[in-house]
Amino acid sequence: MSEWKVVFTKEAYKAYSKLENAYKKALKRQITKLIERRKSDIKSVEGYENLYRIRIGKYRTILRLHEEKREIFVILIEKRGKVYKKL
Image (cartoon, rainbow, N blue to C red; front, side, top):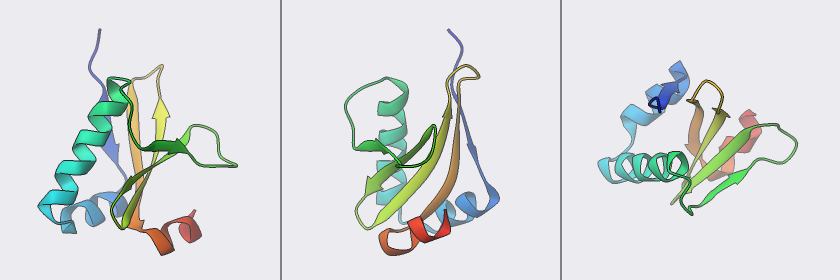
């Protein structure tokens, strides 16, 4: 079984690098849960195919899954009030 690859957009990586360490660790835990198919606070975004959101405190991470390629694309990391306006 091959490993999953996590890819950040430029905007998402910039936001990730500015997050506090606690949020970074929480995001890593949630992505690991997603890969291992464990229960987590990951939900699909209505109106979009293969688009999901991870809720971590006041932040939302939007990501897209490509299971056949075993890739997770982190598209956007933003505060709750702004994230859905940018989709």
